[in-house]
Image (cartoon, rainbow, N blue to C red; front, top):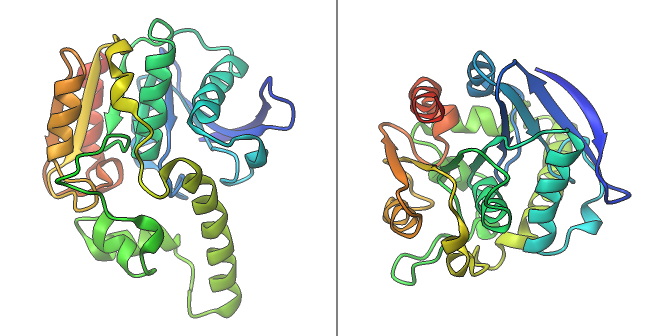
Length: 261
């Protein structure tokens, strides 16, 4: 995928956007970990759609994170990016934190998107099934909670860096701290911004995708999303935890393309 920088209407926010393909516009919103060096599911989606994958401020080369403070800021930023790209009624796909942002976008402007795909989104809260606090995780615990195959997860999370190299380790932690500091604005202490009160506004056809082995956000939340969103479809993916686009890209892309058409 090629990348370019765009500036939104909010002065001071510059966003790096990865782009590929042609056809109906599709915007992918990443989770708290950001995009990885390789995102094969986006390449596959670009075979059928014009795919745009913007990085939030504080991720990659995107800047202006000091201007986004709360959930409404993140939501409006999402639509600002869509406007800066010149898109009309795109498909929205959001993963984890990006799923919460995509859902909020769809609630705020229900007629401005075509279809919505929520991939293991945060944003709801069931007191009997609390979600672990990722900000309290030790480094080795991320792969354990996020991936069905822990070894695969560790390789993706580190991006192939030699963490025995002090300089590489320092760069990794600085970048990760910057990302999590941004994510913490809407995920800490718990990812509950009362989205459930606004979901009634969501009218776009919606697909909820979940890994059957998700240890971070159990599948009981998948059922809750499906209950709250009128006529939402649900797909559970085998041998996947919280990262189905990366763990099972073929199954993920098949489910998404079948739904989007």
